[in-house]
Image 1 (cartoon, rainbow, N blue to C red):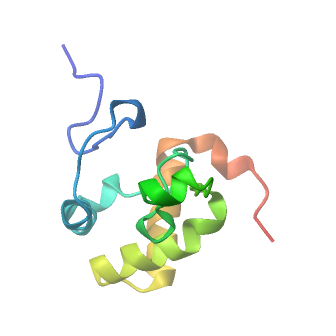
Image 2 (image 1 turned 180 degrees about the vertical axis):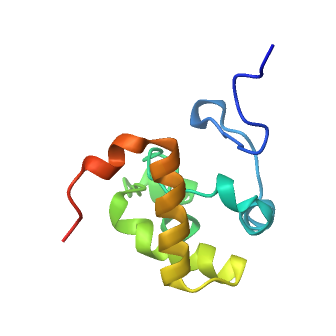
Length: 111
């Protein structure tokens, strides 16, 4: 019997609120196999560290959302962790996204 998921892909479900430190997340991003690296923003309630709001800020009504507009900065962080150029990061993560979701290739390029 085959396993339903590749063993080199790690999924951290947001609803479980898995505890992972920023250092551990950075180490994971730096060490994942190239084939497992994609960029996406399907967790709007889990913002990047630079957008994170503490309990006091949230109590004041300040919110932070992980949105597609954050992808360039996330890509730059990944590039620096991996020792890649931003262009290499874009090419590699785009190729991986196309491999995982082939219908993406049919979408028009962003302007």
